[in-house]
Image (cartoon, rainbow, N blue to C red; front, top):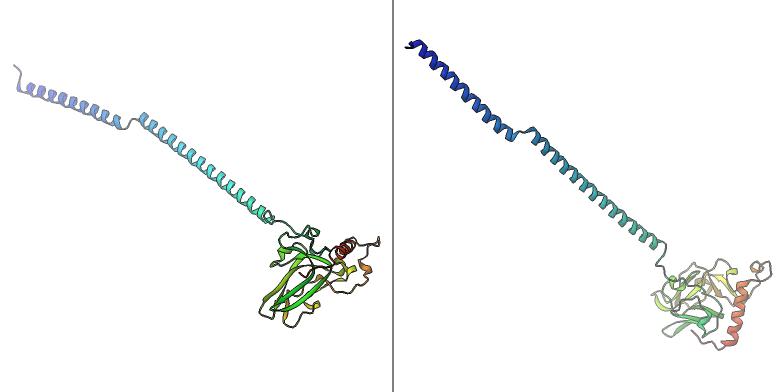
Length: 259
């Protein structure tokens, strides 16, 4: 029969064994739980997936940025091109020429370069208002417009002159005149000179000629010799052409009506 001391030793040994077994089981359970949440391999995979997603996002962002840049470049290029085209005068319209050329009254075809709207051959321009008139003669005919409002209507090397009644700017008439730098620019063989009409013309006191300070080819009625206008060949092509035209005008349009 075992002694009391032996029984106590046996009970203590069994208690130690039971305690060791419980500790092992708890460790295994804890390890299993930890492994489910902190598997290094799984963590690495997740990190890789997140990296791939980030790269894909960066790629999309880069693509969008490139697309926006291309769009902006195309827009700027088109806008600049259109602006340059406008600046170069793409919509400037036709350029009219021929103001002041000799012509036959009633034959606007003698002024082919003129603005077709209102083109006329003027022999006498009668500025008038309320029964008061101020006539101006143009020997050999003068390519012009019957009325004008802007210089652009008259074309190159020309401007629109206005005659007003008194200082109230009531319109008494207008026409296109050829601008000039010297008498050689005009039909000097027919008595035309390069003068300021606002001072060369002698309108009645109740008429005002505008603008002032611009020289134009107008008929002064005085034919003078101008050796400086004759070329080395002894002829002046512009005035010869004008003389030929004025001769035709005298023959075909001798009974010129007042314009």
